[in-house]
Length: 64
Image (cartoon, rainbow, N blue to C red; front, side, top):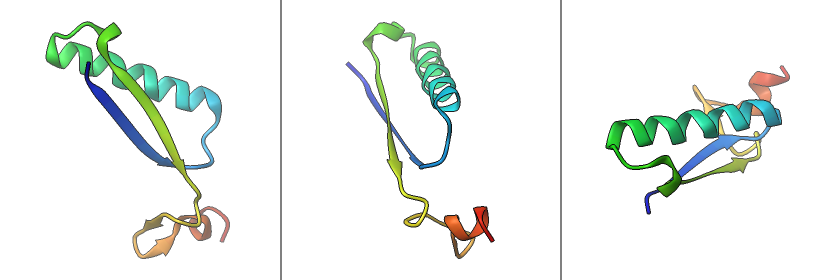
């Protein structure tokens, strides 16, 4: 069974996370021809103080 881990910064609401998981699972199944039921897809959330984007800590870009 294929495993897909998605690492994102904390701060996304549950609906966004569910949509992301759903879309990735469906896309992986379509791309590989493997039944979607075979995939395990999960999110790992990282605090926005531990993510850097463009040389700045993500929290600082969200809350200047």
